[in-house]
Figure (cartoon, rainbow, N blue to C red):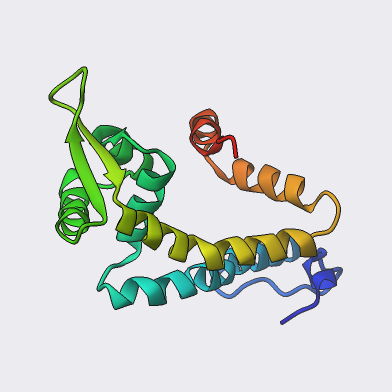
Length: 179
């Protein structure tokens, strides 16, 4: 792995990437590609422990996302969950059916609108969410500490900047929870 200093733009003599006949900003491109690769590798390791837990239930990452967002938003409607996850109704239906049948999620009819289906974690679902989040919280806590003073603010700014601009307010609203 290259040291952090390698993230700085390279000087003269930087080699353009294969397949890029005209790469005038090869150093900048290399720096950005390294950042992209760090995202890939960070995500790989970020989900590795939860993936092992999920595998014991024969669940996958879609199950993890559903458990996470239902747990963080008790009473979320199926339509709201579809908006957050941006998956097809068919995909969500399959995952939800499995989570409901296995006793991790319960579905209740809306009090005001009987057509709505509101989702809640069961106690087993809450326990699963806690198990899935524990290693991720440790990993993020350690990463933020390694970032030093201002690391958490910088992390948040970078992650929000990666979102399409029109989605930022919605995402900030979804993730903003009082402890």
